[in-house]
Length: 323
Image (cartoon, rainbow, N blue to C red; front, side):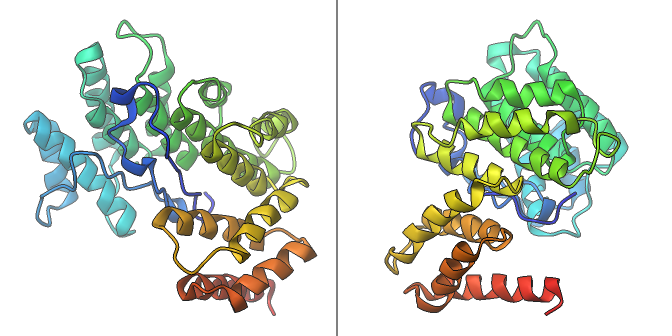
């Protein structure tokens, strides 16, 4: 599993189905950082639990009232993101979470979509990845309850990206997401494919990754979204290509960095996350012009916090190269 932080996951425009995605505010300023899942802040706000252990939260998820179990699932996800020492769901707990997800989904249109998304998110942290992968794969299987709601598709894909896409069925789930009318679902598909492409770029042959022979097709597919009408979709397509070390990605990231160099000192939280992701990926690309532009940001940008962030990136690169 890569230790490179996952890209910010953005949502500006409200999707056509307002009930479908309004539960995810700013849809994921995903720091999904360091192989860790995103902490989702749902529209009902932060959980009010006081320092409950994962065991206590699991008990609330399995036995609590609907609003309590939902918030307990979100809280456990928050702990897993913010503290690497938080115990992950065990095999038994993973199987139980998967069973709860299936039971809730059988309620069809009466299912609690927030709860479904929270459960899918937790599966991606499982201490038993193969068990979790099998449970997540059931999301895409035909069901009497109908197709999975958008929230479940999104967090199922994010969890699969965290675990690593390995099968044709998992790949198809990501490709199908690209055909959605919802920008949020399409972004989750690009997000998953970006990390898959990074894994494929690091795999010399099909013996190292079962989807290696799909690499060229997937790059071409992602390139098609660089000109999408949605800025959020375009950004995530560029980030996905940069992760794959696509030859075109340096020029695309360079255009984003050029915008950073002319931006003012006051940055919104969303701008800051976009810039951080572009700069973090840009530092990894061997392009002299791009590296020069990033260096200028570290020396001249009026936002001191961003300058400090870039300086740390550059120091880390030198250390990694042994300089």
